[in-house]
Amino acid sequence: QVQLVESGGGLVQTGDSLRLSCAASGRTRRSYAMGWFRQAPGKEREFVATINWGGSITTYADSVKGRFTISRDNAKNTVFLQMNSLKPEDTAVYYCAAGDYSSRRSTYNYWGQGTQVTVSS
Image (cartoon, rainbow, N blue to C red; front, side, top):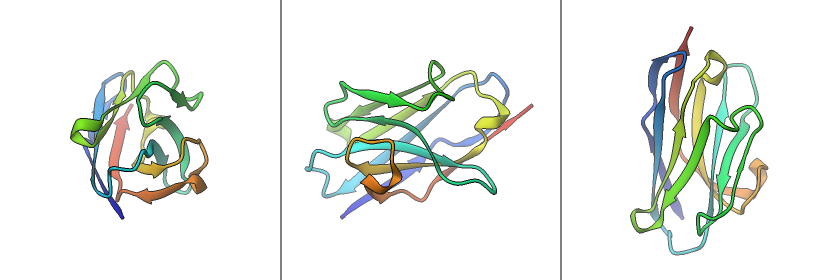
């Protein structure tokens, strides 16, 4: 089992930045890819970004490309999501997940409880 705990969410204004963190514990020795997903009210959970175990390969949703950056520190079992130039449409609960490198939710076995990000206009 892998436990994931997100932090760093909050209320910001359009154009501001936030950095989300996701701390992993438990069976972290396996080489999991890590992903970020988000879910806005009334919408399905959608892919945001993913990073492979070594941190050398990343993929982003088109909606965040150029604004968000995913990174990881395996020594600290932590993955980050740096979010710049935030927009109101970025408002959602953000979840981190551990699993296989993919943009599909079904390939991730473990999920955090989520952290709320609210961007005011």
